[in-house]
Length: 499
Image (cartoon, rainbow, N blue to C red):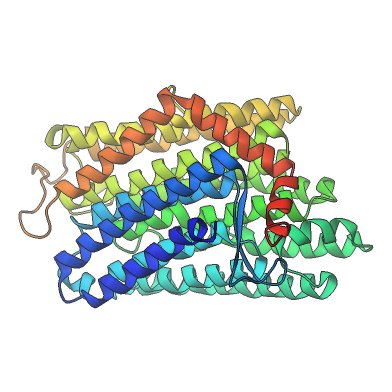
């Protein structure tokens, strides 16, 4: 079991070493990065198959028994997230063949990218809070390196804001870890599930829970802690933006789900009520921010914030159907949002700008790109039968079943405003003529464009498949929700793994 759990972590780091040694050969390092990402996808699928067939799997690194050693554990939620991380890595590594030039490759793009993927996978598989902090730091270091790659002033400005607020989150996270360890004597999440529930001072446990909520809230970019995201995600290269948009905030959401279904569940009338308000305000402020923007990636960045609200909504409602909606929404959003950022990159290569009022004519010049844009855009807005429709339908139904009529109305209204933003991008970038009077086209120099299109088609096909055949994906999400609400299998797998 240890090897099954460790491979999705080892492969990205081994690949990172290989591409670093090949940094003077940009084409070879890019191909090795793609090969490593494909190998990581195979390992992730193997782990998913094991979890689907046998249930929760856990392993103790170095032979130290839980809760004293380093535990890796995968339930259905972890396995799903590792698979979707690997899928995103393959798409972005493929796209990078058509975007990342020789200079960026020599500066370490491919190595940093693989380290980031390893950090994300580690966060999904770790079984204790301190190692979750370690994986957060791995992600922060590698993502900062990717943000400043190229050294443009706007990149540095965005990176400073990104790192400053994430360091605040780190301090809060470490403070929470210290307080929790002082009160319970353990940081193993399975062990904490038992110890926190039996702690005599539940008021202190709730205060510590709120500290973790703020720390993970910054990572998730929820209201009112989201300002670092739209200030930074539009500044790096498009391959970097896509992997950030798809994965980084989802690690924060995953951490919230894990903490507030496994550890801090004794006073949901306090913690989950706060999360419900946070979810509503996150949805509204994000979509209003997107409506006010006129730059392609800024619009998409604010929509990341808005869509995070839907994921937190399912956790806040804390019902089986609501958690199914959260898990399904995570999968849907990672695919769709990464794809929209990749499409924005192709658009900018053809038009020379991301400002919507300066560009146009893409429908006539690149009808395939226009069609590929409509798939994730409609899915993000919740059009049937695409994946976004099913994700929003499940969450709205869960809200109505819980008599949360107001939040259900907010979710529907935000969906309508999302349509407005996607329509604005379509009307300005694709439908109207280019204001300059020229026909948009990709530059003839630089890396080839076909890998970019291949990555976009790959993700678009996945979006269509999830939308047209939602049954298996909803079934996996239901299994994940069941395991989250009944943690016995998780606890037994971890604390019984040493026997």
